[in-house]
View 1 (cartoon, rainbow, N blue to C red):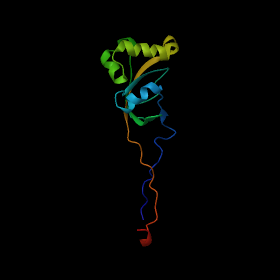
View 2: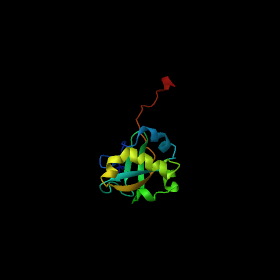
View 3: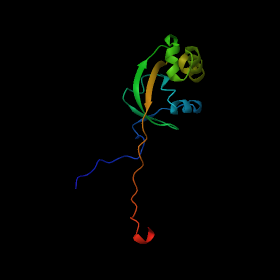
View 4: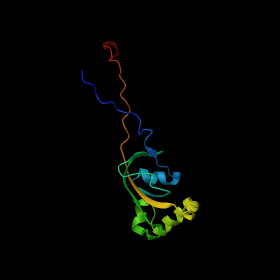
Length: 133
């Protein structure tokens, strides 16, 4: 009898990086209104095609990671991040990353898409006996 591929019940494995968000952004991510995030890192921490996981949301796949200049972000850039304007996005980034901005960290746009959660493993049930039907 051939072996079937093992299906993992885990939404991601230990080699996948978690992408953490403030609680106030989770509903917009679940609704598909927030599909990117701007992150400040010393160097690129994620790559296109990488799987990741957002606690409170589930598994995601990274579709793009690129370096951006904060001052060049437009209102159009801000919308997939859940902001109406680039100024509002920059204000939030200054609140979150003020120390990293001052230290000269690089700015990256991380675009992501939600992935279906893996189905839980099937449990085998004993067939019902005729008396129980």
